[in-house]
Amino acid sequence: DRADNAAYILNDAEVKLLVIQDARRFQRLAQALDNQPWPLRAVLMEQTDTAMRARAADPRLVAAVDWLPASGSEWDQHQADPHALATIVYTSGTTGRPKGVMLSHRNILSNVDGALKIFKVFAQDEFLSFLPLSHMLERTGSYYLPMMAGASVAYARSVTQLGEDLQHIRPTLMIAVPRVFERVHARIRTQLSTRPALLRRLFALATEVGWMRFEHRQGRRDWHPLLLLWPLLRRLFARPVLSKLGGRLRAAVSGGAPLPFGVARVFIGLDVPILQGYGLTETSPVISVNPIQDNRPRSVGVLLPGIQARIGEEDELQVKGPGNMLGYWKNPAATADILDADGWLRTGDQARIDGRHLHIIGRIKDVLVLSNGEKVPPTDMELALGLDPLFEQVLIIGEGHSYLTALLVLNSDLWLEVAREHGLDPAQPASLQDASLIKYVQQRIRQVLVDFPGYAKIRRVTITLEPWSVENGLMTPTMKIKRSQVINRYQSEILEMYELDS
Image 1: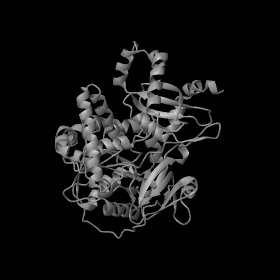
Image 2: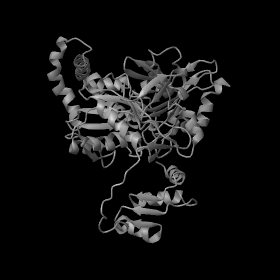
Image 3: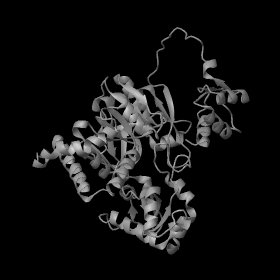
Image 4: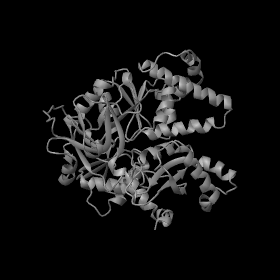
């Protein structure tokens, strides 16, 4: 996270002990905390010359090797209260300052217990953890859960080295966010676009036959003669993709944001079993997940045992269960707004329940209300546009206006090709405003949204090459776009897009 956010959390949570990985992180945090109270002790794990200089320059910092005793004291077991506060987890909210979610030992362990009843994990399983441990999905799914199941966890060195780590660790299970799968999917599409037409048709056949096989094995489709081709298609197309993931992956759980069905279908068709789940930090976090034997990729799975669900006003999903948080840290008003006296928690997500499977259909706060009163859910359009390899990131705008517009971050590699095709200089910022480029982009948007309802018409666009990231404050650590921050950043461009509306 950004240093100023971390500084806010340290002070809000009244942290007394701070453990820091290296001197570089300490220096960034020290600047952000310059005029604020400092924790009682800051312990530096790094043992380098840089770390030694940092400790010499700042008496607040101690080395872990000097701070820890030479030998441990005798182990003393305490009777813990399962309902006591175990952790405060700050939501990586897409609006405003993060809120501290108070979770008890019972909250977390009951969530793990429920997840293990649906998703079997064995002692032989090996996880590869690469998401931030500040996120409850990663802590519960790749930390507490494998610990209770007796499985192993390997920690990736970094996201940039994930490909190498996958080959070395060869995990059997993995927790990921949709953005990871979307990027791999975009790379596959980009690579295929330069291959012969026959190869592209064979790849499409492989994913289609693989999907038929999946549906047949799930008991939702009869056997078909095309399935006889699967051993060959698997060797040619599916096995190379699976080998990129280490070759042993038996399931990958996707959570934290909606997974586009088209992406899930391609991976499942290539024999990469993706299980979509759903949850909130406030529910420790898992509410539902797809079982391997009853996987419906358009859904977010079935409720964990012990969790009740109901649909309230505006189709809002409300849940009640042992994982529901104790409340927000030092914020009773916000707690009362989301958690009622009977223990029902308002998720803010619109949902429907189909049999035993839960479907998330939108986010109440994300619905755009146009000036004519029409309500437009932008999420599905954004997900669809995000599948176009040219569009790295997409945000649709229209609240209070008479038409929709879009902010688009282009893929930097594909931009070079598009610029050449249009006779534009890719290094010149003015090229992004060229009329021929705008027309081309709008044409691609219309092609993507052709099967959407009548409201799905993007009148004007703003194009940029600057990615929205955690570092510039426009994305959460779990790679969700901070809608309000992006809108604030591009205020002048948005005003220009709506000059026709004034």
